[in-house]
Image (cartoon, rainbow, N blue to C red; front, top):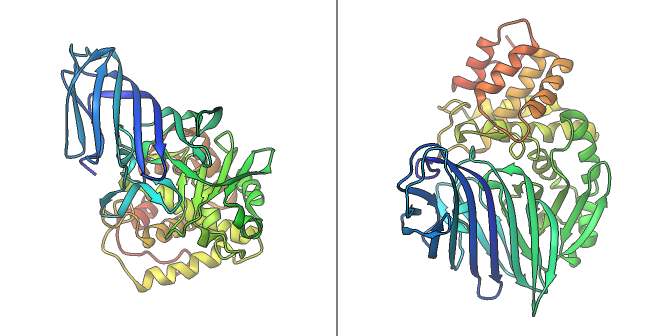
Length: 427
């Protein structure tokens, strides 16, 4: 995504003050962005969708000139920012938020029948706030959202303040751990908030009251999943976790930092969506805490989350991870692709084969290393790169420390060549 992301500075914090009216779908916001330059800046840019209009901009308390076109907000400070200089950028903006259309459909702010949600992966964050929209540009956030009082508003982080006004309620959330912009999210709806567990990780549910009984059945293993994944991957990386179910059907669930969002169709009183529930929870480690620095390495997010589905299946009495690996290996073999897993290209990076080949690659690595070394590697991966950004090369380097054998041929065959290598143990 060459049009997203910006050069010349590094953001250290976002403070978003948002006012949202549900019925007319109108958003008014003030974004205060704290950053440090790493070169002299006479001008710099932020990502902001064209359907939002900017009213004013200041840099270090001085009005700044700006232009806004083609999804870029270009800002000229009153005085240039010197290398290493701190800057506080305040942007007042507003409009009718809507998704951004691209190769992967529509992503970003999405109006529901009775509320809204944000599904920003990979490039939808500028649909609702100005940002440096690159996965490596992680920063802490404070998000304040004022909306109509009948509605519950959820954002990333911990709720630190809730204030009622004349027909509105303001919800203030503090996300202290650094977060990629595509993981920033707001969910607004008429939801019931419940606690599912208090320790060792607080787990909450947010769903329409009409779905309470269905939720109890469809999500009855949510707490046990957390226990299994913390055992396999190490401590849960955030303060708490929330499973959100909206009152609309959704094509796929969505992960955000600290919570996941499911459609009413995923909460039907059966366990048919259980693999998706496991998948989204696993993203809290793989994708949200440990985040890809480049989109080409998306297998590090999706392959790990898909393999987590198989591990949960085995731990919950279903097919083993090995059985699932053979099952999907056969499907991959029957439908070959012409691009390597390590660089599927923007058009294909969310295709199902990336998820499945990534997971099969991890199972092949597990067979190569042995269970002890493999799961020690995963725990070291989530610990060493906690809240950081990674590349495929980082994983290759770390995996190499868990064996005395060269893994060069393994990585070449599984990651860098499009042809599917033999299943481990096959001749």
